[in-house]
Length: 311
Image (cartoon, one colour):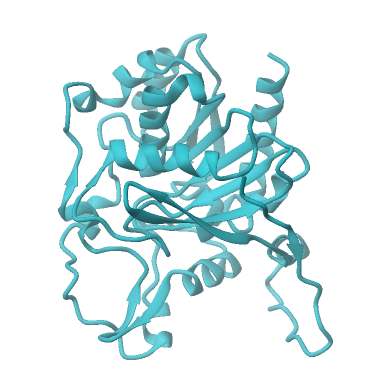
C-alpha cells in the first residue's frame, strides 16, 4: 500500500507576499502541498499528485489534452474533507513518461491505476475535463464495475480531442524557448477562452514548463496527438453518445455555458442521459472552468458527490 502524508506548508516570515489579485481561498488551497508519487503502467512511469487521507474514497481528476495534474492544484484540496484525491499526469503529459504511441484505452488503464495507487480500497469517482472526459468515459466503459461514478466536463459528443487542431502539428524536435519568461509569456489555454483568472493562469503556467537541452519547453510530448490511436476496436470507434449507453457505473455531465458544447448538442446529451445521471450547466463558464469559475465548479462537483453518496 502506498503511504502518503498530507503536508500543509505554513508561510514563513521570509516568504514574499502573495500577489494582490490572489484571493485568500486560492492561497490557502495551494498551501496544502500534494504528495508526489508515481506508479508504473505497462512500462511507463505515471506521475501522481495526492491529497487527503487513505481511509476516504478516491476522487480522481483527469486533465485535458496537453495539460497536466497541476491544473487541479487549486481544486483538489477543497475535497479532502470527504475524499482521497488523486490527479494524474496521463502518459505524454506533465511529469509522466512518454510512449511510442498513445491510445484512449491505455490512458483509461492509467486512470484506474491512479485510483489503485491512492491507497484507498473504495471504488473511485472519476472527474474528466475535455479530452479527459473521453478518457474517463473510456475508463468507465472498460472498468465500470471497479468505478463508482464518472463526471464528464464539457467534452463534445463527436470530437474526442478538442485540443488536437492546435497541438497536432508540434514535433519532438521543435526548438525550445531561450528563457523561462519567454515561454511563460506564451502560455494560453487550448482552446482559448475570453476569461481566465490571472492568479490561476500564473500558477498553471509555472507548472507547465521545464528546461531541456534545447531550451525551455512545454511539459507534454508533442507526439501525443500526432501518434494518437483513437480507433483500436469497433467499440473504440463509437462516439460519446453510444458510449453513454454502455457505461455500467453512474455518470453525470457538466456543460460549460461558454464552452465547446453548443445548445443543440447539450439537449442531445441531456436526452441521452435521461434518468441515467444528472446533466448540469455551469453558468458563464468557459471550456476550462477551473480557470474562470473555480469555486462554482467546486460547488457543483461537491453537490454531485453528495447526491451520489445518498442514492
